[in-house]
Picture 1 (cartoon, rainbow, N blue to C red):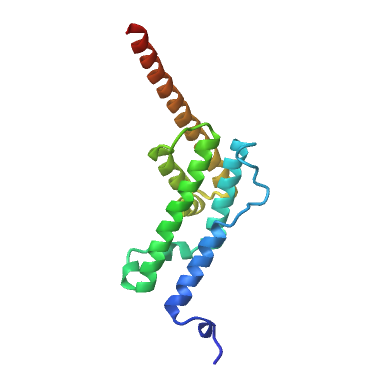
Picture 2 (cartoon, rainbow, N blue to C red):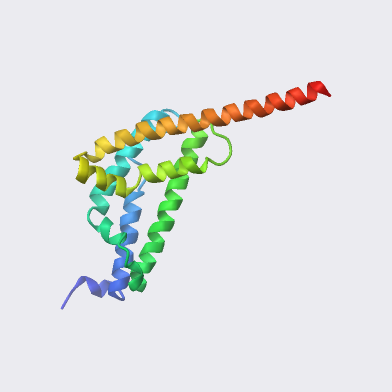
Amino acid sequence: PRTIFRHYSSQSNLIICTVKDMFEACGRRPIEGLPSPEVDLDGWLSGLGIAIHTRNAEILGEAFWDLHAPDLKESEALAEVSVLRRESRRRGVHYLVALAWRVAGGVGEPPEHLELAFALHFSAFTTQALMIDFDQTPSQIGALTGEILNLLLRRAVEAQVMERAEHEAINDSALSES
């Protein structure tokens, strides 16, 4: 009999390849209509939020829950999927927060709390919870995500600017006293 399994060495290989394809689809670039963050950071955050939450809903869908099940370590293939998911997510979130941080005027690495905020607000858990429990669409969730992340990003950059100004004032004061 001809089945899809003839294209894969095992059922585990099929699962791993499928999940890799799902993650690649979720991270697919460029995102149509997404402005450059250097030109429109607010529009970029909002558009990115909408794209991510739409992809979370459409691509991951109900399979999302299977990928986060507590018993993934029972299968070697599912354990590999778990590692792949975690590494892919951390890499993607770090890339996005570092880009936003730099474009907003941040210097160096973004603060950890900002990276965690990006992780939380771009999470498929967020998508699923707000769709199921609060009847929100991915577009509504994405727009809200963009607003929240923009506020947190601006606050973090302002805090860094203030901290650097305070350090410069202390250094200038110490130099003038000597």
